[in-house]
Amino acid sequence: MATKGSNSIHRSSSRPLLDLSKAEIQGNVEEKYPTILLPNQSDDLSHLALDIGGSLIKLVYFSRHEGQSTNDKRMKILKDKLGILNGNRRSYPILGGRLHFVKFETNKINECLEFIYSKKLHCGGWESHHSDSTNDQNAVIKCIHFVTKATGGGAYKFADLFKERLGISLDKEDEMDCLVAGANFLLKAIRHEAYTHMEGQKEFIQIDPNDLFPYLLVNIGSGVSMIKVDGDGKFERVSGTNVGGGTYWGLGRLLTNCSSFDELLELSQKGDNRTTDMLVGDIYGTDYPKIGLSASTIASSFGKATLENKELEEYRPEDISLSLLRMISYNIGQISYLNALRFGLKRIFFGGFFIRGHAYTMDAISFAVHFWSKGTAQAMFLRHEGFLGALGAFMSYEKHGLDDLMVHQFVERFPMGAPYTGGKIHGPPLRNLNEKASLENMCATELLEIN
Ligand SMILES: Nc1ncnc2c1ncn2[C@@H]1O[C@H](COP(=O)(O)OP(=O)(O)O)[C@@H](O)[C@H]1O
Ligand SMILES: CC(C)(COP(=O)(O)O)[C@@H](O)C(=O)NCCC(=O)O
Image 1 (cartoon, rainbow, N blue to C red):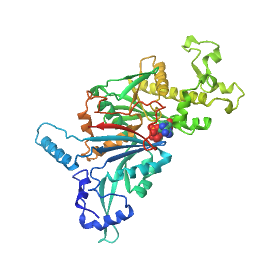
Image 2 (tube, rainbow, N blue to C red):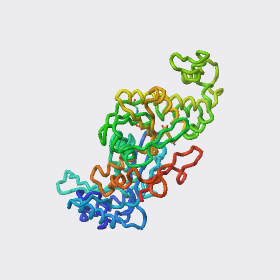
Image 3 (spheres, rainbow, N blue to C red):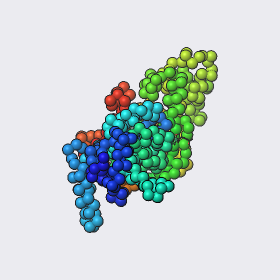
Image 4 (cartoon, rainbow, N blue to C red):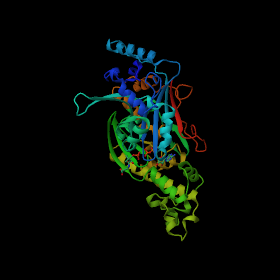
């Protein structure tokens, strides 16, 4: 049954408060979704946003530090807001808590649903209170459901599943909007978010938040989107390619029988692509200096397979994986640079889970950008690479007036001088593939802790 506390999870004062006179309708909802906690019990639980992509589901959720009552914080928020209204100095409430980053494979969506359920994240959304008139003028059906911000194709495709299994309504946010919002937030707010990776060397880039735009955002997910970003909410998707992360994983799986993406990546580390790729040296017998090609340059990815009468089994899976990785990474790097050139953009940031913090992938992309730009452009990568869309969806709570999340406070509270380590902000590690980063055996979790 509804309790008075139900009101407390409304995220915006402009939203209608729970109508207790219609409590029996909520009872029905509870019957259908017995797992939903009453809001007053879930008060300190998390806020969730999802990015359901072609390959992976990304979750971002905020959980408050234990021991701090949300009501205390709300009072402080209210006081601070009054301060703003009175023309006093701006002050920001302390919202202690964590942003958690979790991912699942989209084809294992059940694991994701179970995770959300086990963490009670489905109880953390805001309540929407609809009145639908039926044919009978006197009968007004009131229903209460939880709404969660979601982006990516799966926000459309799996909307019914989320509704049936968890009682969550997915409130759809545009994928490109979310990618840009997530990238802008990270680049402006999180110190040491962006870095270069060349020949095995990683270097963090200090971004001046006042001198961020314009830039090219290249999101390498299943497919690739290239977005010219001119400001907050100001962008244009200028290009894309269907040869992306899904291509590497899909072709790689078929050609090597690998059972996981990480296994395929790991194989590539032991590969030698000279057995599969046709090099300039294979064609010329030497370098081709006149057009700047060394003998070791790949002239044709997988081209060597045409010269030999060998069956697939006669090629080492390691070599195939490496050839494929280089082919796709170079291609994306090249198209990205050409688009940057097209619009006169100096900076190119790469996100998406294809990158996977994998040194060789980043080196290959960087090499292509460097090579085609003749050293005038540089690829940069993001530590929260695959979570841009999910972060953007999370931030859209604020955009829609659900402002007790006040994501902007994270920005304000952690300017560029905020420490990168030392208990304040823990970003995801740039993981070595050998490290197992699974949480509860089902997902990888990375934390950005807001103290
Ligand atoms: N565990 C994984 N399973 C499948 N693909 C993975 C995995 N980890 C990284 N990838 C790579 O990440 C890509 C998906 O990246 P992502 O940014 O999540 O895109 P999408 O939104 O299309 O799911 C895959 O196509 C694959 O190249
Ligand atoms: C359709 C998509 C935006 C979906 O995003 P994803 O799930 O791949 O992250 C993306 O796959 C894409 O941009 N593909 C390339 C399509 C093209 O421009 O040719």
